[in-house]
Length: 129
Ligand SMILES: Cc1cc2nc3c(=O)[nH]c(=O)nc-3n(C[C@H](O)[C@H](O)[C@H](O)COP(=O)(O)O)c2cc1C
Image (cartoon, rainbow, N blue to C red; front, top):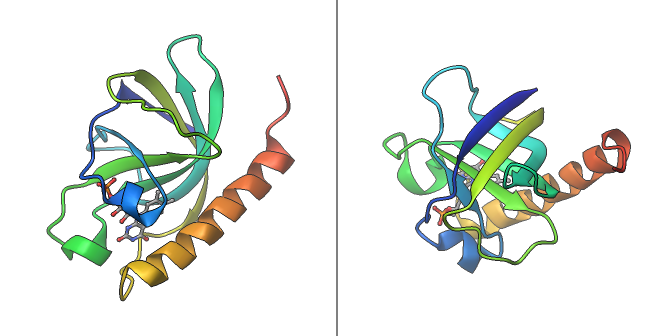
């Protein structure tokens, strides 16, 4: 299981308009494979841990191959503002590679599946407490 420590930065806000807001954290250059992951985000050093669907990559749907590489975590059942918070992102299971979708509608359809897959992972593998 891989962990990334960082401070939440502002994204370009598209995630919010897609209905999948993300907390963006600087991504290490090495040792982390692009893709979509089921994992968790710990809020603060001793804070609560939330389940998250996490994207690592260049967002080829919008930026071709030239996009900046980002780590974006969509926290399930969470609506707070995390900007500036210190977080620990844990990547547990790689669900799929990054893909280029023909548009936002197709991406959103896949994001729904990613969230469902992440929920299924959490229900199976995350013990309470
Ligand atoms: C779970 C998850 C999976 C994603 N998968 C892809 C993907 O396969 N291809 C892609 O181009 N973008 C993918 N994205 C990134 C979205 O394009 C991005 O979150 C959206 O454009 C919002 O960007 P912003 O937060 O910088 O505004 C994914 C995002 C999430 C949260």
